Image (cartoon, rainbow, N blue to C red; front, side, top):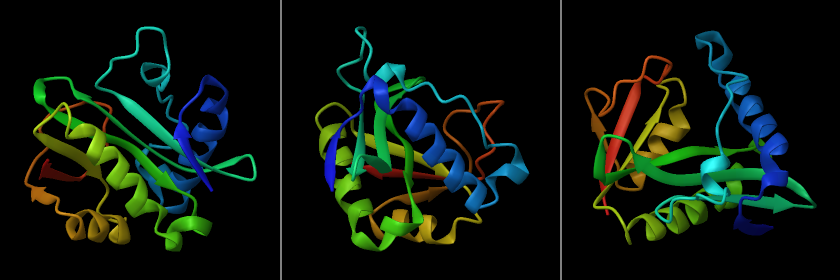
Length: 156
């Protein structure tokens, strides 16, 4: 497996990976599949130096990804963005490695890291708790399109 920064050529595979994971966890029931994610902030000429997205490639196929970007209403808080892994690699510890890479990067620019997810993703929620994230009662940032129902924060 190779972990590397996202490139423009990865977008279609990454969107397919995310939509596949959302369908697996019934995200389609809450209107979250086939969302038009904007990953250009991670590879464009105007890329924010405080943002990054990493993909995991295996045999030229993307099997996981995760990013860090600023939370729009607070300069001290970043968001762990779109962390998704195909079922086949979830037991490989790649989730832990990706999280460590992302949080190490985030620690250079931010004081806290925010993440949002869904309550039916039980293993995901346990993963965040096990890795030092603390549950919040409400989102830090209200977004009309967002269907997440669980939010976490972690000191960096």
